[in-house]
Amino acid sequence: MSPLNAKTVSDAYGLASRVLSLALGCVVPTVLGYFLDEWQSIRPIGVLIGSLVGFLSLFVQLRQLVREMTSKLPEHKKPR
Figure 1 (cartoon, rainbow, N blue to C red):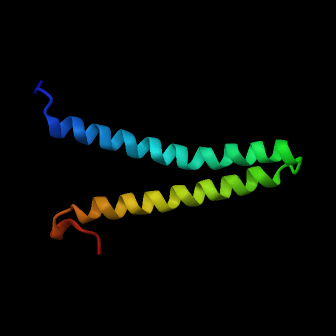
Figure 2 (figure 1 turned 90 degrees about the vertical axis):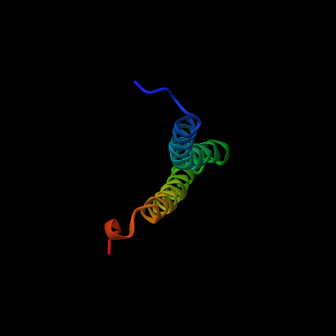
């Protein structure tokens, strides 16, 4: 097994950060919507709006991730 170098560790932390950001970007708005529902007694409007915002955030972040990953591909392997 090869020793870990700074680039490998940096890439691993970058990927972990991206995954955590994707997960929290979807979960946090839904949880905030739940608390809004409890506070204002407007069930299920807050959760629905929070879920919609979370999924839109997830979609935007995934789209950005795909663009970043495809920009690093060699020219002959890029999708057309």
